[in-house]
Length: 151
Image (cartoon, rainbow, N blue to C red; front, top):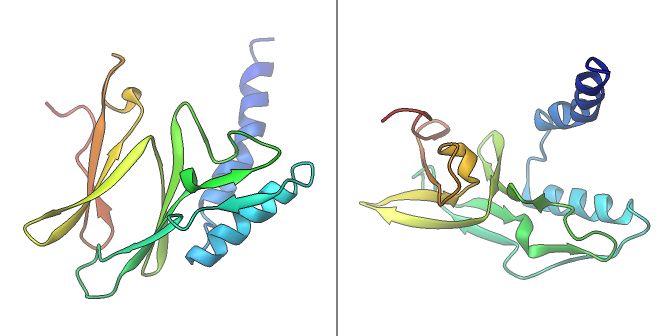
C-alpha cells in the first residue's frame, strides 16, 4: 500500500511533466489548447474574456510579449480546469519559450523602465505559514526571481 500511492501519484503526474516541455509557442495556441481541453471534457463549451490576452514588453526590446491569463477562461463542464487552490495558470509567451506560472492574482509594475511581473502565489512558496506570498519576476535572458529560503 505504501508503494502503491507514490506509483499512482507518479503515473498521474507524468503527463504534466511531459507537457511542461511542450508548451504552446503563441497565445493563439494556448487558447486553442484550452478550447480542446474543454471540448474534450464532456463536450464542454469554452469561453474567454477580452482580457484573456494582454501585451507587455518584458524583454526590453520594444516588442510586446503576450501574457495569457487562464483566470479569464471558463468551461461549461468544469469549474477548475485551469486552476485550483494553488492558483490559476498564467502563461507568458516570450522569444523562443513559453513560461507557465500558477498565481492567484498578478500585476505588471514598472520599476525604473523595467516591467516586473508580480504574482500573488500560494503561501507554501514563502513558508509553511498560511498568509500572503508574492514573487517578482524580471527579464534577463529569461525570467529571474529570488531563490526561496533566503532571508
